[in-house]
Length: 300
Image (tube, rainbow, N blue to C red; front, side, top):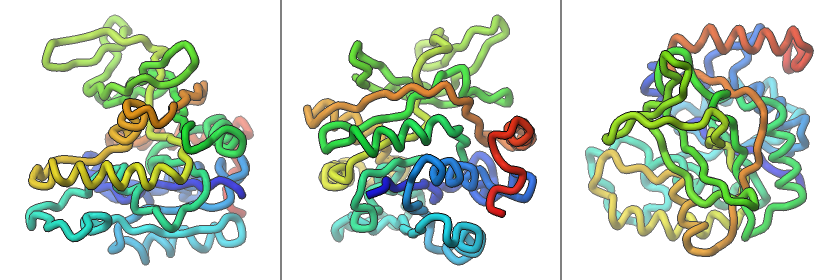
């Protein structure tokens, strides 16, 4: 069975100020997602599952169904606050979705095969999808998951600081922990630093970071469901609390359930964290097209 690609597209896009998931960046209005799906198809993925908010469903399907028809199987999963809450009363003022791990949990029943998870608005590069497909076809088990690790220096924005999960990796290439670092940027001396409450800290430009490109066995759903229930018991009344994929990954390792391999890629990441990043994304895509990595028109 071919692996499935799950795309997280239900986010609010709050910093960017629009529904950036469906903004056109390619020469024929292709979205960043189009390039991910194109890369996934040529790497051997058999299905793409979009996690979206139900109110966007019709507009979203009108964009993607015509171009993907006959190229890859599609499915849609709606993330809502009630899903997997098991009847627990959700505070009336809760508007924020429960987070990325809850979004993935919403795929339970739709995804029954090994799968990769990516963000809708990140460009990951062909190499990442080839490595993910190889892992999902050959190495994934209920005790072995993986994350595609990007070099920190290839994931920065020129238009402001970024947040990245910095992976600690052991001698066997397995993740031991993932540490969320906010306010990462290259300073005037060219050194990459991050800020926290204790001040400034230097971080290696070759550090392996998470761009939320995970590879899972479907056994992750049952494990996540239990963790989400515990999360709601503790965090239900915190309006900003979120159940993130790294929480599941961390618990998976700590509980001795298995290992998460960090699979390195040399691919250049790019994405739209700030509005000012948009022209850079367009220019980067045009360079790849001119280099022959992608056709001028993806779907024709």
